[in-house]
Image 1 (tube, rainbow, N blue to C red):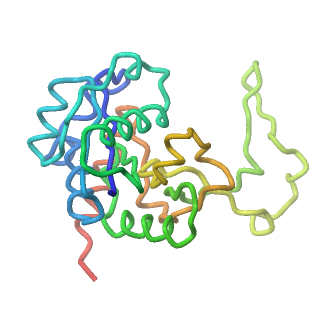
Image 2 (image 1 turned 180 degrees about the vertical axis):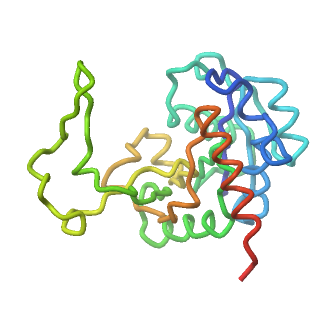
Length: 233
């Protein structure tokens, strides 16, 4: 069985009720649910939440909410892996088949594309990796990054690259924060996601936006509308 798990707790701080706040006409979580359902990759699309209102919205858009996430997995310090491990354990115990490939799809990923979800599954299966997750490249060489001193001056993190041309520096990537395909066994064993057992699913930079602050939210809506306005190829 292939399972999608969308973590969506109710206690977001910087953007209150972020998971169900209306984003470009729909509750934020609806975009992830619809992408998962439309991808055709999953036997079940489950939302893991501790919040009754989020559960109601999730069901309205077609997801299953077969359990309420326990309080000890719903605080600010709980990581992704324990939440997915709990969902796998619950589904395995209450369904007629066992999860094999499991995708953690974030509730705040309105830019996620069904083609990328499918591509992630294909990469996971054909490379026999533990995980396959979305990454994108940094827009500027991280080797030339700056830090602020205590008196608001600047230093380079790596001064040896002051005179190194940007094109001569190794390209670096970061987690795009959309989805994490994984083998159920890897999730259950708590294997590290950012390690050699994982393979990347590359995304273009203009398709990636963290949404952690009101400024991020505004920028994301502008980007989302611009992408939707592009003519279909």
